[in-house]
Amino acid sequence: MHVGERIAAHRKRRGMSQEALAGLVGMSRTWLSQVERGLREVDRLSTLTDLASVLRVEVNELIGKDWKLAPDVAPQVRALDAIRSQLAGYAHLLGADADLWPLPQLRSAAVLVNREYQAANYASASAMLPDVLGAADALDAFSGDDSRELHLARCMVYTVTAKLLTKVGESQLAWLSADRAARAAMSADSTSAKAMAAYQVVTALLKGQQNDNAERLAVGTAESLMGRATSDRPDIVSLAGAHWLIGSVIAGRRADRATALQRLDQAEGLSGVLAQDANHAWTAFGPTNTLIHRASVNAELGNHRGVLEAATLIDPDALPGGLNGRRSRLHLNLAWAQSQARHDLEATMHLLQAERVAPEVVRFDGVARELIRGLLKRSRRPAPALNKLALRSGVLA
Image (tube, rainbow, N blue to C red; front, top):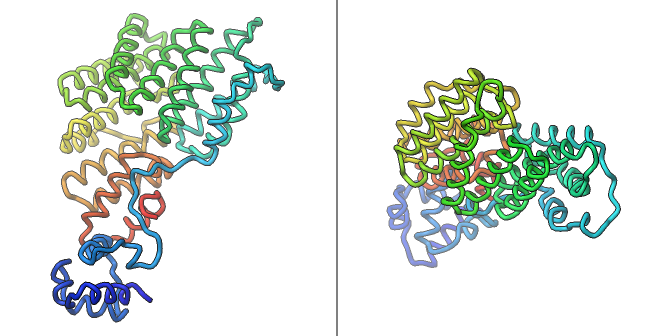
């Protein structure tokens, strides 16, 4: 049976005329007659869901296969189970034999994973992590001449692991990884490493809905770094700026506009110290990223006009190469703003642009998936590009 035949069968079972059913879904009797005879398709998802609702059936009963709109079901990176097993294994505490990687190898691996993460190649980054985590764990208790540099490399490994796990929605594992990064930073006695680890703890806390604790740590870290944030310490400047930026987003989430803008101003001042876009300490901090966060804060405040105004000042090409995740964030902010303005075509175009820049961001980002879901639900005309995007991103299965 084709879709039209199934619709006809369920309509007759409900004792409804074609005119009655067509009227309830806002279509003509002629249109429904053509659908039931297989002369035309139901080419709007919203109409299909309306038909299912009126007929009191599931959509899959009309189309003959499983179909679900599931933006709240997070996809998983392929290597997640292996990462979880490595983090939970504690083989190094059991004295298990492990190949001790030389410092240059561990450091190079951490750099490579960070690059893949910032390029939004999450599957590639995750595939590398189990082995790299094993090497970092094996060096936990190392106390030789190179111990400080080894612990700094370990901190970088655990930090990027926390980044990835937060991005794909694994808040508890991200928190565990961030905590290990903090321990490694303490062992190295490095201010910048401690600030890197603290940032990942903040993001993991946010993912776990512990906003107050996250805000306290972000702002406290930013304030503690300000005295050392000088032009000859671009890593400290960048880390302080990054903490002010995430602190501004948190303030925006609780609708504290004044505090959010004040923290943005702090970050903007620090970006002026750098005077250029950079990626010190893997923060992507600089003038352009600060402007992207200004757009994000306006989105958190529900101010779609503010997002559009901020976007007019942003040149995403000014960001250093490889920061695809940051570039895609601008388009996601703009997609949200256009959606709020009921400019659904423009919203869809920005989602497609975000996908072109960083396909895996759209698949894993909760805001992107929710935007796609909302646009699908209120679509009133055929939207094949949106439908295909929904399929690719896993919103529509």
